[in-house]
Structures are given as structure tokens and as C-alpha cells.
Length: 209
Length: 209
Image 1: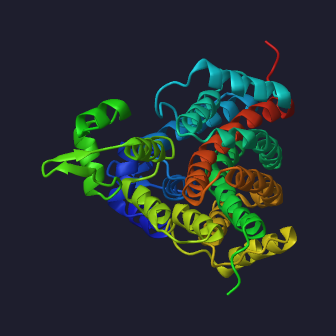
Image 2: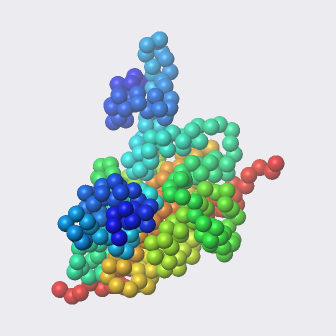
Image 3: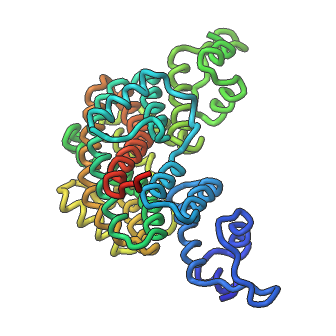
């Protein structure tokens, strides 16, 4: 199909498609004549992926570029591509580095759960940074929730990897890992808010009308 | 203290403090003379809260304004203020409305968990929207993870409410609910990525070197 039809099928405007191409998010079409590029199903699929990462996942164009370049790098084994996807998706550089006390608290948590993970995973610094913020904001009582959060994270990760394992093929697995992680964060946040309403109504019953 | 000292203590520049005041995020100081406002500990604390919501939580200035206005509204019972905080924190309007099929899937999930929650909670639409995206992107196998996600959400929400219950006073509780939800999303996402690395290494062992 031509660019105009790709736009119609995908619901993405022609200038936006051209912008994604300039940013390296979408491969150019195959030239059928020197001035006429042809697009296929892979382009439609890629556009849907880009829109979801931007609109639902809340990623920036630059972040989408990073995660797609991970998917598009050939020849990595599955564990590496999952790792690289997750690393690319971890927001880095938010605020200053956390103190050793908070990194140690995450190390201790990892040891309690028996996870084979260390500080090389960028999520370690993110987790330590949140603990530092809680402390700074006088919210140390939230530290008591962290063991429950990590048990929950384990349940989530096992379901994540089961979904990846249920997907056939290296590229499709990378896409499942990517979408499951980015959109899954939004889904888990939404389910958390639904569960909070239920638990809150039990714990702090609203006054009778 | 004067504005200059508030800036020094909080690490936030004077123009930025004035910007927050114009946007209604930070109350003005008490006038000691017609041209001299005085600031106190409440201002320092509020600035730390604003910075955390912006830098760690990734909220926009407008979103910070909405959640702070919820905290600042006097006279609501605890369950209502928690609900209002959570509602204000739920990203709305990302993408179009999900079809009935996906809303029904969330209703069914809620019924299976026995949660006393309905479609009036904006997180319901967010969750249904993510399911619709997964389906559109050919990732229906991720639907199988949703029951595990909802069990995890319940564990998280119980820990959330325990942290709120451990906090004394209505305003402090609202602040704990707010920070626990916004920064907690980031923490839970980070713990999920750490757990994913552990589970992935077991499920997809890297090739021996």
C-alpha cells in the first residue's frame, strides 16, 4: 500500500508518519519506483505499537526510539533481549542518586526474596531513590509496605514471563515483553486503585447518610 | 523565614517558587510588612512534596495542582479524601473509550475478587482501555496475566491502606495516600523489573559462555 493508505488504515496522519520515519521509529517503505514507497502489514503493526507506547504508556518519542532499537537489534538471546527491553524502559536520572542506606535496604529486600539480581539492574537505583524520597518527605511508615510490594512484584513478574513464554518467536516475544511491561504498569496501577477503593471502604467506612 | 531563605533551605530557586505560587501550588507567605512575606516549615514541606510529585512521580504541573487541591479541601471524611486523591491521580482521557467487551472483562475480574468497586472509579476505564490495546496489538495472551495482576494489586492495596492507617491525622493521611500512590507506582514498577530479571534468568537461561 502507499503512504496515503497506510495513513487511512492506521489512523495516523501522513505528516506524523513522516515524523516517525525521520525519528527512526518506522522503517521507510520499499521503493516500487524511485518516487513511490510501498508499505505493508509490518508498518501498520509498528504504528499501532508506537501509538500505544506514546498514548497509553506515556513514553516520550525518544524513549520509544530506545525501546524499538532494542527490539530491532538482531541476534540477541531471549533473556538478553528481555533484559535490554526492561533496562531501556527503566526511567533513569530522575533526581539525584540515593544514599548507600537506601541501596542497602533494596539489597536486603532482594536477599529476603532470594532474587538473583544486583545493582547493575537500573531498577535498583530507581527503587532506592523512591525510598530516599519517602524518608525525606517524612513517610518512613511506607517502608513497612515494601515487603508486600516485593511479594506482589514477584507474582506479577511470574505472570509476565508466562505471557512471554506463551508467545512464539524471538521478535514477537520482545514485543510482548515490551508491551506487557509498559502497558502492564498502567494496568497494574489501575487495578491497584480499584483494590484501594475496596480496602479503603472496609478500613475507613464512610459515615452513614 | 524570607523567600530567599526558603529557596536556600528547599533547594528550589526563587523564580520557581514564585511560579508555583502563581499556579496555586504553594500558598503565599504571611505578610510581616506590606512588602515582606514570611514562610515556615509548612512551605518547606509543601515544596518537597511538589518536587517529588514532579520529578519522581512524573506528574505535570496541572496534575500536581489537582491533587493538592484535593488535599487542601477541608472537612472530607478519610474514605472520601482517599477516594478523591486516587481519582485525581488516575490518568484520564488516554486514547478513546474501550468497548463494552473490555469493560465487562474488568467487571468480571472485580466480581471474581469480590471487590466492592464499580465503573464510577476512573481506574475501571483505564484498565478496560489497556485490555483493548492488548487485543488490538495482538497480545491477547497477556489477558491470562490479569488475574495474577489483580491478586498482586490486592496485596499492594492492603499494604497501602495499612501505611495510611499508621499515619495520624487527616491531612497527614491524605499526604501519605497521595505520595504512597504516586511514588509507590514508581517503586512497584522498579520492583517488578527486578523480579522480572530473576524470573527471566530461570525461565530463559542465558547460553553458557
